[in-house]
Image (cartoon, rainbow, N blue to C red; front, side):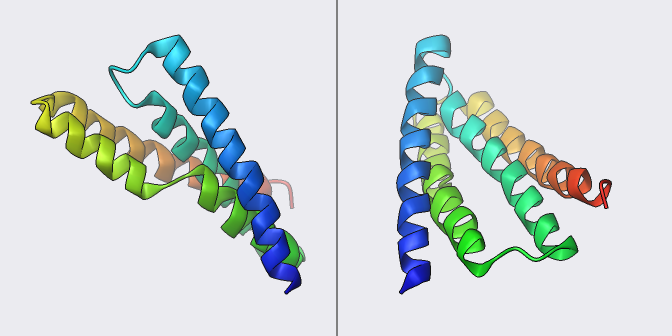
Length: 124
């Protein structure tokens, strides 16, 4: 039961962060490209890399893993939003933007997961 509460707390924090980041990115860049989704995916990937690596080099409590890895990151980043936004761009005939969205999300997020891991591993 304790882990469920930690997941719920992390989820609440992640959902609010996602909302605020999305609103901010729309205000800065407009609605022509899903920069908000890209940013939360990049941030979430980096944090996932850090949490994973910390778990490999030291003890990370199951509660913290549940709160951050499942709750916060689960609410902050969603593949379904990425998929829907990409499909909408394709349906609007914005094939270049759709392709760019796929390439940027996958390559940047894989790179920052690696960077997050290396940040931790280089310190131990």
